[in-house]
Length: 125
Image (cartoon, rainbow, N blue to C red; front, side):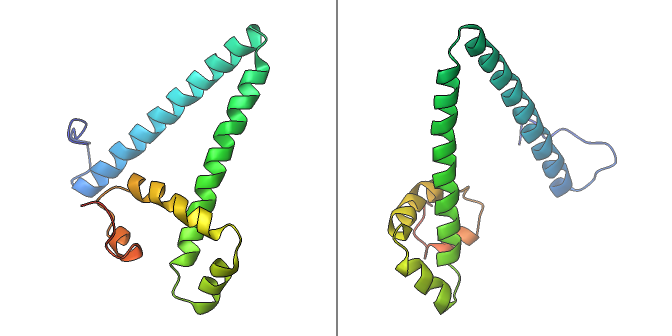
């Protein structure tokens, strides 16, 4: 944010300014990704490679689904309720999904204080 931390009129708070810049970055990335996706999809359609588009979409959807499932399993496992932890322990896929949370822990920014409390201090410094 340092290079984009320019003054925003009518905003004196650093937190609000960083939030506005964050929203602008996410919005620009979303619009850029959408434009790139449309261009690739049109190119693949012209070249009659729609099956490549569907296959890549399936692979990306599978990865996103697995990461979302791992995040949900991690959240449920961190709830200090015996019934919730028992459900996770009885699950057939819970061990595999919780092993995948290693990747999620690596993706979490260091600013999150929740990280150390969720993982018992087992995170990067």
